[in-house]
Length: 187
Length: 218
Image 1 (cartoon, chains in turn purple, brown):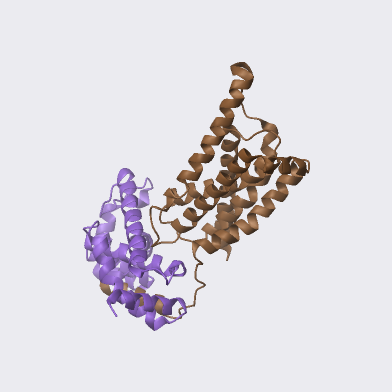
Image 2 (spheres, chains in turn red, orange):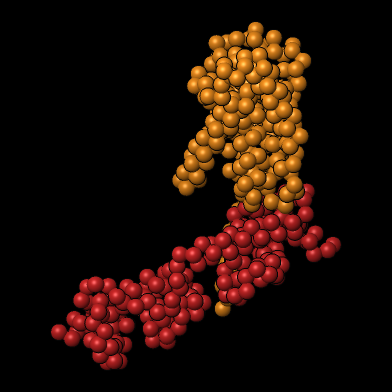
């Protein structure tokens, strides 16, 4: 029995609810999916995001596989479709957004522009540590990775397993809470 | 780290895996669609066109109309098969070629009818303006095929939306046109076909909105 026949057999078992066969199948097709994606997406971490999108699509649409047909063409269509969807998304984002690693705090309110005070406050490491301890774990991790370790959003997302969007939100909330906490202590 | 996340995802997807109801082959779904949607469409056409069964019988005895009906039915079947196939990954991507010949034949028959009418009535009387009185018949005969094909397509996967959507619209328009051609008093023209397609598009858009709402709720 060749590799693709094995995939077909595992997929049929997975459609019947066999989790172990499904896990074997997804592990086995991973190199094939990666090779399809990396032909079009050169950045390894972004390529891995697309690979995960494809796995989710395979999962969501596993009922559409017909056991009378070969499994590989079914997989190829889904993998190529999702990769093209990703490239279109990147193209659309590139046309209207500029990605930056540092987000300058430039809101109009006075509270958002106390750069020197913030710098002085954050220089007091004991106070900063104490304030950090009070933050919820997600916010603490976001501030730690992005501000203290000075990682880029992409690196921090890889390190924490959080999405870029939730990292941005957590960091913003974390910084706001830190400022409020340290301002309170300073009074 | 990346592989670890992907491995975690695989483990999560495989845990407590539920059995799925396999999508039936396109041929089987096509038969279901025709068996359900065609009688509804014909019944609606019969009632909305003043129960004119005599006209339908007369048209069925005319060889040219019979030829046209065959072309319409073949277009509906081929386009329906193409739409359903294209929504199932792994099937041939050239499936959209199936309805090309029957549709071209049907369209040429309509074109010839229009030309004959143009020759009979002349350029002053011949009009391409919308005949609003035809629209209820178009809508009534078209709704069941359009809702039916949209419901069947929503269970598949849109890997080539352009082909799936255009074939679905053609199939539903053609199946609706069968009832129209049998019971509607004026002859089917290009304009009527256009109306049929617009009606089908509206029904399919409505069906998509309803099904996406229902899927969000389930």
